[in-house]
Structures are given as C-alpha cells and as structure tokens.
Image (cartoon, rainbow, N blue to C red; front, side):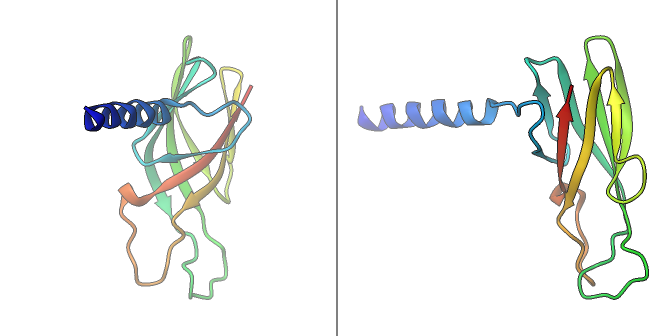
Amino acid sequence: MKIAISVFLFATFWGCSEGTSPNLGEAFDLKYGQTVQLSSNAITVIFQEIEADSRCPAGVECVWEGNAEVLLKVSTTDLSGVYSLNTTLEPKLIDHDGYMLELVSVSPYPVYGEDISEQDYTIRISVTD
C-alpha cells in the first residue's frame, strides 16, 4: 500500500512539474521540438528547427563570431506563423500578434571537431506582451 501511494504521489508531482508554463517576461529554455504555452494558453511557441549554426567553435580562432539561426512556430488565437531568430544577425526579436519574442541564447556551444545533433539543442527565449 505504501508503494502504491508513493508511486501515485511521484506521478502526481512529476506531472505537475511537467505541465508548468513559463511566465511572460521571464526567459525560459525550450528543447528542440518542444512546445510551450504561455499566458493562460494565449500564445504557443514550438522550437521547430535549428536552421544554421555557424558560431565559432570553442578552441578555434575566428574572424567572426558566427551565428545560430532557429525557426519558431508561434500561434495565438488569431494568427499563426513561422519565424527565424538569430543570435548575432537580425532579427533577434520579432513581434507576433502583440507578443515580442527574443532569442536569448542557443546551446550547446560548438566545440571544434564535435558534431551537435538537432535533438541536443536548447534555446533560451523571452516572450513579453
């Protein structure tokens, strides 16, 4: 009986932590392919794709710092669109139906001689209204 109660409590708390939504104005992490809903489900953001990653790898001397470009699918009640955001180039910030989305960072950072799988990418974004 104690085991059943422990499993129930673990599942309940684990489910709650998975279902928490980030707040508007607070930067949050989004893994490749992940979907998040903000502001009482008024806006949905999906990290759809890593379009390019030309950032200068650690351990290499480059003449330019490079750029990471991500594609986000963003939806509100009235509008849906796919947007490109960048770490170095423009746009770094977009307006979708009155919500401002900003790409804060992309990780992991490239290392010379190591490939990064799309599934390993996490972005940090901020959404404000």
